Amino acid sequence: FVHVKPPFLLASIGFGLLLNLSSAFKWYMLSRSRGLPVNLWRLFAYYMVGQFFNLVLPSSIGGDVVRMHQLGRYTGRYADAVASVFVERFTGLATLVLLAMVAVVVNLHLFNLPWLTIGLAIGSIGIALICWLIIDQRPFRLTQKLLARRVPLLQKLFVKIEKFRQAVLAYQSDPGAIWGALINSLIFYFLAVMNVWVSALAFGSKIDFVSMLVAVPVILFIMNLPISIGGIGLMEFAYSFTLGLVGATPALAFSTALLLRAKTLFHAGIGSLLYPFVSDGHPIREGVPMEVTNKYGENGDD
Image (cartoon, rainbow, N blue to C red; front, side):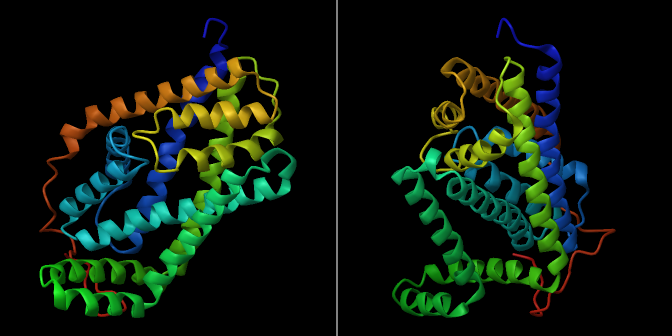
């Protein structure tokens, strides 16, 4: 860090915040598609709070649960709140898996690694399976029929799952929202490439931008594997391993990873400061329409 270049360091900090804003904007578009009465800046605050909680649970599960709860509590529509976070995350993950697969296939001489291929295969199958379980009601009905009779306590859980499933399916009535989310995901990952590139340039990197276009999707895919608390160790491995394949020295790769880790902690710190101001947001009951009936004739309340 002694020889860090301040202009690129400042650019790196700026891109980090821009990435969070991009994700919050996608969440905002999906929330407004379902008529949830919330503004962009509150969602941005929730997103930063989620960054704080991401540090204590595998992958981004902790932050997502907190975001679902906060938005559901604020709007009084938990099913739609959960669906908006799910669709925001799912479209991003599907886009990431696709980009990582393209990067690996186009550069097999770099990424001809069994564990990476298996990981991408599992990710692709998982995404397809989730889509099937949401769109096709038969697996859900069969599971409900088999388990609810034997364990009556599960009936309430199945009711909540069905509300969530219908809230997600409601996005079928607004294809523009889904396409907008997918386009936003592509923009997000382009910004993510820029973020890593300028972070590496801060330490005098000679890696070209095209190489970063190849490396970053693979890095982010590895980082999303749910095998580490807060991504500790996994993030550093992803950067050191993948950047090393495109010509980075171990020192450069590790320094870049440490800078990005420091920015993650910085964003989490901002989230911890915002949390007291948004966590006690009162549910909206007056002055805004609370009920938005979807195409299935049900509202989004839980």
